[in-house]
Image (cartoon, rainbow over all chains, first blue to last red):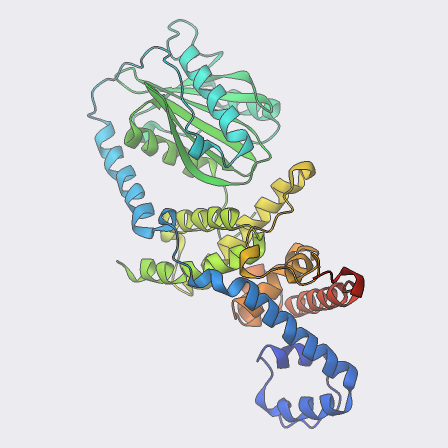
Length: 262
Length: 162
Protein backbone atom coordinates (compact mmCIF):
# COMPACT_ATOMS: atom_id res chain seq x y z
CA UNK A 1 0.00 0.00 0.00
CA UNK A 2 1.59 3.24 -1.13
CA UNK A 3 -0.27 5.41 1.27
CA UNK A 4 0.23 9.06 1.87
CA UNK A 5 -2.93 9.38 3.88
CA UNK A 6 -2.23 12.28 6.22
CA UNK A 7 -4.85 11.15 8.78
CA UNK A 8 -3.38 8.85 11.44
CA UNK A 9 -5.82 6.75 13.49
CA UNK A 10 -5.48 5.84 17.16
CA UNK A 11 -5.05 2.21 16.16
CA UNK A 12 -2.03 3.22 14.13
CA UNK A 13 -0.54 5.00 17.13
CA UNK A 14 -0.84 1.82 19.19
CA UNK A 15 0.61 -0.24 16.37
CA UNK A 16 3.48 2.25 16.12
CA UNK A 17 4.29 1.90 19.83
CA UNK A 18 4.02 -1.89 19.68
CA UNK A 19 6.13 -2.34 16.55
CA UNK A 20 3.18 -3.57 14.49
CA UNK A 21 2.89 -0.65 12.10
CA UNK A 22 3.67 -1.46 8.45
CA UNK A 23 6.97 0.16 7.48
CA UNK A 24 5.37 2.33 4.80
CA UNK A 25 3.29 4.15 7.42
CA UNK A 26 6.16 5.08 9.71
CA UNK A 27 6.89 8.31 7.91
CA UNK A 28 3.25 9.39 8.02
CA UNK A 29 2.92 8.65 11.75
CA UNK A 30 6.15 10.44 12.65
CA UNK A 31 5.11 13.47 10.61
CA UNK A 32 1.74 13.42 12.35
CA UNK A 33 3.29 13.26 15.82
CA UNK A 34 5.56 16.20 15.02
CA UNK A 35 2.51 18.37 14.45
CA UNK A 36 0.09 16.90 17.02
CA UNK A 37 1.50 17.39 20.52
CA UNK A 38 -1.48 15.72 22.24
CA UNK A 39 -0.92 12.52 20.33
CA UNK A 40 2.82 12.77 20.85
CA UNK A 41 2.18 13.03 24.60
CA UNK A 42 -0.09 9.97 24.48
CA UNK A 43 2.52 7.94 22.66
CA UNK A 44 5.16 9.01 25.18
CA UNK A 45 2.86 8.07 28.08
CA UNK A 46 2.15 4.62 26.60
CA UNK A 47 5.86 4.00 26.17
CA UNK A 48 6.58 5.01 29.71
CA UNK A 49 3.78 2.71 30.98
CA UNK A 50 5.36 -0.18 29.10
CA UNK A 51 8.74 0.61 30.61
CA UNK A 52 7.27 0.76 34.12
CA UNK A 53 5.59 -2.61 33.63
CA UNK A 54 8.74 -4.21 32.28
CA UNK A 55 10.89 -2.71 35.02
CA UNK A 56 8.46 -3.93 37.65
CA UNK A 57 7.78 -7.48 36.47
CA UNK A 58 10.45 -8.31 33.91
CA UNK A 59 12.82 -9.59 36.59
CA UNK A 60 10.56 -12.53 37.45
CA UNK A 61 11.75 -14.25 34.27
CA UNK A 62 15.35 -14.14 35.45
CA UNK A 63 14.69 -15.88 38.76
CA UNK A 64 15.41 -19.55 39.06
CA UNK A 65 12.05 -21.38 39.04
CA UNK A 66 11.24 -23.17 42.30
CA UNK A 67 11.51 -26.92 42.51
CA UNK A 68 7.78 -27.44 42.32
CA UNK A 69 7.83 -26.14 38.74
CA UNK A 70 10.46 -28.64 37.71
CA UNK A 71 9.07 -30.30 34.60
CA UNK A 72 10.87 -33.58 35.13
CA UNK A 73 9.40 -33.82 38.61
CA UNK A 74 5.85 -33.08 37.40
CA UNK A 75 6.39 -35.58 34.60
CA UNK A 76 7.63 -38.27 36.96
CA UNK A 77 4.40 -38.05 38.89
CA UNK A 78 2.49 -38.72 35.67
CA UNK A 79 4.63 -41.75 34.91
CA UNK A 80 4.01 -43.14 38.39
CA UNK A 81 0.36 -42.96 37.57
CA UNK A 82 0.75 -45.17 34.50
CA UNK A 83 2.87 -47.70 36.40
CA UNK A 84 0.54 -47.69 39.37
CA UNK A 85 -2.44 -48.35 37.13
CA UNK A 86 -0.77 -51.44 35.72
CA UNK A 87 0.18 -52.58 39.20
CA UNK A 88 -3.21 -51.91 40.75
CA UNK A 89 -4.62 -55.21 39.52
CA UNK A 90 -2.01 -57.31 41.30
CA UNK A 91 -1.51 -55.36 44.49
CA UNK A 92 -2.55 -57.46 47.46
CA UNK A 93 -5.53 -56.56 49.56
CA UNK A 94 -4.87 -53.83 52.02
CA UNK A 95 -6.99 -53.64 55.11
CA UNK A 96 -8.03 -50.08 55.73
CA UNK A 97 -6.85 -49.55 59.26
CA UNK A 98 -8.81 -48.20 62.15
CA UNK A 99 -9.35 -44.54 62.60
CA UNK A 100 -5.94 -43.43 63.70
CA UNK A 101 -5.63 -39.70 63.82
CA UNK A 102 -5.29 -37.64 60.72
CA UNK A 103 -2.47 -35.17 60.76
CA UNK A 104 -2.80 -32.23 58.46
CA UNK A 105 0.47 -31.30 56.90
CA UNK A 106 0.52 -27.61 57.53
CA UNK A 107 2.74 -26.85 54.57
CA UNK A 108 0.40 -28.50 52.13
CA UNK A 109 -2.80 -27.36 53.73
CA UNK A 110 -2.02 -23.72 54.37
CA UNK A 111 -2.48 -22.41 50.85
CA UNK A 112 -6.21 -22.85 50.69
CA UNK A 113 -9.06 -22.05 53.02
CA UNK A 114 -11.35 -24.95 52.10
CA UNK A 115 -8.65 -27.55 51.57
CA UNK A 116 -8.17 -28.39 55.22
CA UNK A 117 -11.88 -28.59 56.06
CA UNK A 118 -12.79 -30.60 52.99
CA UNK A 119 -9.97 -33.07 53.47
CA UNK A 120 -10.68 -33.52 57.17
CA UNK A 121 -14.40 -34.07 56.58
CA UNK A 122 -13.76 -36.38 53.64
CA UNK A 123 -11.40 -38.54 55.71
CA UNK A 124 -13.89 -38.64 58.58
CA UNK A 125 -16.58 -39.83 56.18
CA UNK A 126 -14.19 -42.34 54.65
CA UNK A 127 -13.32 -43.85 58.03
CA UNK A 128 -16.94 -43.91 59.11
CA UNK A 129 -18.40 -45.64 56.07
CA UNK A 130 -15.60 -47.74 54.70
CA UNK A 131 -15.99 -50.26 57.51
CA UNK A 132 -19.77 -50.43 57.08
CA UNK A 133 -20.80 -53.84 55.81
CA UNK A 134 -24.57 -53.68 55.47
CA UNK A 135 -25.25 -50.00 54.69
CA UNK A 136 -22.17 -48.38 53.20
CA UNK A 137 -24.27 -46.27 50.82
CA UNK A 138 -27.78 -44.87 50.49
CA UNK A 139 -28.18 -45.46 46.77
CA UNK A 140 -26.51 -48.44 45.11
CA UNK A 141 -24.07 -48.10 42.22
CA UNK A 142 -26.42 -49.75 39.73
CA UNK A 143 -28.66 -46.68 39.98
CA UNK A 144 -26.00 -44.39 38.55
CA UNK A 145 -28.33 -42.03 36.58
CA UNK A 146 -30.54 -41.47 39.60
CA UNK A 147 -27.54 -40.95 41.84
CA UNK A 148 -26.06 -38.39 39.43
CA UNK A 149 -29.29 -36.46 39.11
CA UNK A 150 -30.10 -36.46 42.80
CA UNK A 151 -26.66 -35.45 44.06
CA UNK A 152 -26.11 -32.83 41.32
CA UNK A 153 -29.36 -31.22 42.38
CA UNK A 154 -28.50 -31.25 46.06
CA UNK A 155 -24.88 -30.12 45.65
CA UNK A 156 -26.03 -27.37 43.32
CA UNK A 157 -23.69 -28.02 40.41
CA UNK A 158 -23.31 -30.91 37.95
CA UNK A 159 -21.54 -33.82 39.60
CA UNK A 160 -20.14 -36.50 37.32
CA UNK A 161 -19.53 -39.89 38.83
CA UNK A 162 -16.20 -41.13 37.47
CA UNK A 163 -16.20 -44.48 35.70
CA UNK A 164 -13.30 -46.37 37.26
CA UNK A 165 -13.99 -49.95 36.08
CA UNK A 166 -10.97 -49.70 33.80
CA UNK A 167 -8.67 -49.47 36.78
CA UNK A 168 -10.50 -52.22 38.58
CA UNK A 169 -12.88 -50.23 40.77
CA UNK A 170 -16.60 -50.89 40.95
CA UNK A 171 -18.98 -48.17 42.09
CA UNK A 172 -20.60 -49.36 45.33
CA UNK A 173 -22.92 -46.35 45.40
CA UNK A 174 -23.29 -42.97 46.99
CA UNK A 175 -24.91 -40.86 49.63
CA UNK A 176 -25.57 -37.26 50.57
CA UNK A 177 -23.50 -35.81 53.41
CA UNK A 178 -23.14 -32.44 55.12
CA UNK A 179 -19.87 -30.71 54.26
CA UNK A 180 -17.93 -27.49 54.90
CA UNK A 181 -19.98 -25.55 52.34
CA UNK A 182 -23.29 -27.43 52.44
CA UNK A 183 -24.56 -30.53 50.69
CA UNK A 184 -21.79 -32.86 49.59
CA UNK A 185 -21.82 -35.89 47.31
CA UNK A 186 -20.05 -39.00 48.57
CA UNK A 187 -19.25 -42.01 46.38
CA UNK A 188 -17.70 -45.31 47.33
CA UNK A 189 -15.68 -47.61 45.09
CA UNK A 190 -14.40 -51.10 45.75
CA UNK A 191 -11.76 -53.25 44.07
CA UNK A 192 -12.01 -57.04 43.65
CA UNK A 193 -10.10 -57.60 46.87
CA UNK A 194 -12.56 -55.48 48.85
CA UNK A 195 -10.39 -52.44 49.28
CA UNK A 196 -12.49 -49.26 49.35
CA UNK A 197 -11.92 -45.73 48.13
CA UNK A 198 -14.25 -42.78 48.49
CA UNK A 199 -14.78 -39.60 46.55
CA UNK A 200 -16.21 -36.55 48.30
CA UNK A 201 -17.34 -33.53 46.23
CA UNK A 202 -18.84 -30.20 47.22
CA UNK A 203 -18.93 -26.62 46.07
CA UNK A 204 -16.08 -24.29 46.95
CA UNK A 205 -15.04 -20.71 46.34
CA UNK A 206 -11.41 -21.76 46.13
CA UNK A 207 -9.57 -21.36 42.87
CA UNK A 208 -8.59 -24.33 40.78
CA UNK A 209 -5.72 -26.50 41.88
CA UNK A 210 -3.92 -29.54 40.67
CA UNK A 211 -3.85 -32.64 42.90
CA UNK A 212 -2.66 -32.05 46.46
CA UNK A 213 -1.72 -34.93 48.71
CA UNK A 214 -2.33 -35.23 52.44
CA UNK A 215 -1.57 -38.24 54.58
CA UNK A 216 -2.34 -39.64 58.00
CA UNK A 217 -1.30 -42.90 59.66
CA UNK A 218 -3.35 -45.39 57.70
CA UNK A 219 -5.24 -43.33 55.20
CA UNK A 220 -4.57 -40.51 52.85
CA UNK A 221 -6.32 -38.20 50.45
CA UNK A 222 -5.86 -36.31 47.25
CA UNK A 223 -7.62 -32.97 47.05
CA UNK A 224 -8.29 -30.84 43.98
CA UNK A 225 -10.63 -28.11 42.78
CA UNK A 226 -12.09 -28.11 39.32
CA UNK A 227 -14.63 -25.57 38.14
CA UNK A 228 -15.78 -24.59 41.67
CA UNK A 229 -16.13 -28.22 42.72
CA UNK A 230 -13.79 -29.39 45.47
CA UNK A 231 -13.10 -33.13 45.35
CA UNK A 232 -11.30 -35.38 47.80
CA UNK A 233 -10.33 -38.93 47.00
CA UNK A 234 -9.60 -40.92 50.15
CA UNK A 235 -8.19 -44.37 50.64
CA UNK A 236 -5.46 -46.43 52.24
CA UNK A 237 -2.16 -44.58 52.53
CA UNK A 238 -0.48 -45.89 49.40
CA UNK A 239 0.43 -42.76 47.57
CA UNK A 240 1.05 -44.11 44.05
CA UNK A 241 -2.06 -46.20 43.97
CA UNK A 242 -4.19 -43.39 45.34
CA UNK A 243 -2.66 -40.99 42.86
CA UNK A 244 -3.58 -43.24 39.94
CA UNK A 245 -7.20 -43.31 41.08
CA UNK A 246 -7.33 -39.58 41.85
CA UNK A 247 -5.87 -38.78 38.45
CA UNK A 248 -8.42 -40.98 36.68
CA UNK A 249 -11.26 -39.31 38.61
CA UNK A 250 -9.75 -35.87 38.05
CA UNK A 251 -9.56 -36.44 34.29
CA UNK A 252 -13.19 -37.50 34.13
CA UNK A 253 -14.60 -34.75 36.31
CA UNK A 254 -12.73 -32.15 34.25
CA UNK A 255 -15.18 -31.49 31.44
CA UNK A 256 -13.27 -28.75 29.68
CA UNK A 257 -10.50 -28.80 27.15
CA UNK A 258 -7.80 -26.32 28.14
CA UNK A 259 -8.07 -24.59 24.75
CA UNK A 260 -11.69 -23.69 25.21
CA UNK A 261 -11.19 -22.17 28.59
CA UNK A 262 -13.78 -21.72 31.26
CA UNK B 1 13.21 -34.81 26.46
CA UNK B 2 10.75 -34.43 23.60
CA UNK B 3 10.49 -31.31 21.49
CA UNK B 4 7.13 -30.57 23.13
CA UNK B 5 8.57 -30.78 26.67
CA UNK B 6 11.62 -28.77 25.69
CA UNK B 7 9.38 -25.99 24.44
CA UNK B 8 7.35 -26.03 27.64
CA UNK B 9 10.54 -25.98 29.70
CA UNK B 10 11.90 -22.96 27.89
CA UNK B 11 8.66 -21.03 28.40
CA UNK B 12 8.51 -21.43 32.20
CA UNK B 13 10.43 -18.21 33.03
CA UNK B 14 8.15 -16.15 30.78
CA UNK B 15 5.05 -17.80 32.26
CA UNK B 16 6.23 -16.89 35.75
CA UNK B 17 6.74 -13.28 34.70
CA UNK B 18 3.30 -13.07 33.11
CA UNK B 19 1.61 -14.76 36.07
CA UNK B 20 3.43 -12.48 38.52
CA UNK B 21 2.14 -9.39 36.75
CA UNK B 22 -1.37 -10.82 36.46
CA UNK B 23 -1.69 -11.84 40.10
CA UNK B 24 0.81 -9.46 41.76
CA UNK B 25 1.42 -12.26 44.25
CA UNK B 26 4.51 -14.43 43.77
CA UNK B 27 3.02 -17.47 45.51
CA UNK B 28 -0.31 -17.35 43.67
CA UNK B 29 1.59 -16.81 40.43
CA UNK B 30 3.62 -20.00 40.86
CA UNK B 31 0.44 -21.90 41.80
CA UNK B 32 -1.07 -20.90 38.47
CA UNK B 33 2.10 -21.74 36.57
CA UNK B 34 2.20 -25.17 38.23
CA UNK B 35 -1.43 -25.84 37.32
CA UNK B 36 -0.71 -24.67 33.78
CA UNK B 37 2.19 -27.11 33.46
CA UNK B 38 0.19 -30.00 34.90
CA UNK B 39 -2.61 -29.35 32.43
CA UNK B 40 -0.24 -29.01 29.53
CA UNK B 41 1.48 -32.33 30.32
CA UNK B 42 -1.86 -34.02 30.81
CA UNK B 43 -3.25 -32.64 27.57
CA UNK B 44 -0.24 -33.32 25.38
CA UNK B 45 -2.41 -35.60 23.23
CA UNK B 46 -4.79 -32.69 22.55
CA UNK B 47 -2.02 -30.57 21.17
CA UNK B 48 -1.78 -30.93 17.40
CA UNK B 49 1.22 -28.87 16.48
CA UNK B 50 1.40 -25.12 16.45
CA UNK B 51 2.87 -22.71 18.92
CA UNK B 52 3.34 -24.35 22.33
CA UNK B 53 4.13 -21.00 23.91
CA UNK B 54 0.85 -19.38 22.80
CA UNK B 55 -1.02 -22.47 23.96
CA UNK B 56 0.56 -22.24 27.43
CA UNK B 57 -0.35 -18.55 27.63
CA UNK B 58 -3.91 -19.51 26.74
CA UNK B 59 -4.14 -22.08 29.54
CA UNK B 60 -2.63 -19.69 32.05
CA UNK B 61 -4.96 -16.87 31.01
CA UNK B 62 -7.98 -19.13 31.43
CA UNK B 63 -6.83 -20.40 34.82
CA UNK B 64 -6.34 -16.84 35.99
CA UNK B 65 -9.86 -15.95 34.90
CA UNK B 66 -11.17 -18.86 36.95
CA UNK B 67 -9.12 -17.68 39.90
CA UNK B 68 -10.56 -14.18 39.68
CA UNK B 69 -14.08 -15.55 39.54
CA UNK B 70 -13.43 -17.58 42.64
CA UNK B 71 -12.03 -14.52 44.42
CA UNK B 72 -14.99 -12.38 43.40
CA UNK B 73 -17.34 -14.80 45.08
CA UNK B 74 -15.81 -13.99 48.44
CA UNK B 75 -14.94 -10.32 48.28
CA UNK B 76 -14.07 -10.09 51.95
CA UNK B 77 -11.10 -12.36 51.38
CA UNK B 78 -9.79 -10.78 48.19
CA UNK B 79 -6.15 -9.93 48.86
CA UNK B 80 -4.87 -6.44 48.26
CA UNK B 81 -1.25 -7.27 48.78
CA UNK B 82 1.63 -6.75 46.47
CA UNK B 83 4.24 -9.25 47.51
CA UNK B 84 6.55 -8.34 44.64
CA UNK B 85 7.14 -4.90 46.09
CA UNK B 86 10.83 -5.70 46.51
CA UNK B 87 11.40 -5.31 42.79
CA UNK B 88 10.12 -1.76 42.73
CA UNK B 89 8.89 0.40 45.55
CA UNK B 90 5.66 2.31 44.99
CA UNK B 91 6.45 5.67 43.51
CA UNK B 92 4.11 7.96 45.32
CA UNK B 93 2.62 6.70 48.53
CA UNK B 94 0.86 3.71 47.02
CA UNK B 95 -0.40 4.63 43.57
CA UNK B 96 1.99 3.04 41.13
CA UNK B 97 1.94 0.94 38.00
CA UNK B 98 0.98 -2.21 39.93
CA UNK B 99 -2.07 -0.57 41.42
CA UNK B 100 -2.90 1.00 38.09
CA UNK B 101 -2.99 -2.51 36.61
CA UNK B 102 -5.22 -3.63 39.46
CA UNK B 103 -7.77 -1.00 38.50
CA UNK B 104 -8.23 -2.50 35.04
CA UNK B 105 -10.82 -5.05 34.05
CA UNK B 106 -9.37 -8.49 33.40
CA UNK B 107 -9.46 -8.47 29.57
CA UNK B 108 -7.74 -5.11 29.00
CA UNK B 109 -5.11 -5.97 31.62
CA UNK B 110 -4.43 -9.36 30.04
CA UNK B 111 -4.18 -7.84 26.54
CA UNK B 112 -1.79 -5.12 27.69
CA UNK B 113 0.49 -7.50 29.59
CA UNK B 114 0.65 -9.97 26.72
CA UNK B 115 1.68 -7.17 24.35
CA UNK B 116 4.05 -5.03 26.42
CA UNK B 117 5.47 -7.55 28.89
CA UNK B 118 5.42 -10.75 26.86
CA UNK B 119 6.01 -9.16 23.46
CA UNK B 120 3.27 -11.11 21.70
CA UNK B 121 1.77 -9.87 18.45
CA UNK B 122 -1.79 -8.58 18.21
CA UNK B 123 -2.65 -11.69 16.24
CA UNK B 124 -1.32 -14.01 18.96
CA UNK B 125 -3.19 -12.11 21.65
CA UNK B 126 -6.38 -12.31 19.58
CA UNK B 127 -6.01 -16.10 19.47
CA UNK B 128 -5.26 -16.37 23.18
CA UNK B 129 -8.27 -14.25 24.10
CA UNK B 130 -10.47 -15.78 21.42
CA UNK B 131 -11.54 -12.44 19.95
CA UNK B 132 -10.91 -10.47 16.71
CA UNK B 133 -7.82 -8.26 16.45
CA UNK B 134 -10.02 -5.16 16.56
CA UNK B 135 -11.22 -6.18 20.01
CA UNK B 136 -7.65 -6.65 21.20
CA UNK B 137 -6.85 -3.15 20.01
CA UNK B 138 -9.79 -1.59 21.78
CA UNK B 139 -8.84 -3.45 24.98
CA UNK B 140 -5.32 -2.15 24.63
CA UNK B 141 -6.59 1.39 24.08
CA UNK B 142 -8.84 1.17 27.13
CA UNK B 143 -6.05 -0.18 29.32
CA UNK B 144 -3.62 2.55 28.28
CA UNK B 145 -6.14 5.32 28.68
CA UNK B 146 -7.14 4.14 32.17
CA UNK B 147 -3.57 3.71 33.35
CA UNK B 148 -2.66 7.15 32.08
CA UNK B 149 -5.51 8.90 33.81
CA UNK B 150 -4.88 6.87 36.96
CA UNK B 151 -1.20 7.79 37.13
CA UNK B 152 -1.74 11.39 36.05
CA UNK B 153 -4.77 12.03 38.20
CA UNK B 154 -3.26 10.67 41.36
CA UNK B 155 0.11 12.22 41.78
CA UNK B 156 -0.60 15.14 44.08
CA UNK B 157 2.41 16.88 45.56
CA UNK B 158 1.07 16.29 49.08
CA UNK B 159 1.47 12.56 48.68
CA UNK B 160 5.17 12.88 48.08
CA UNK B 161 6.30 12.50 51.65
CA UNK B 162 9.73 11.10 50.95
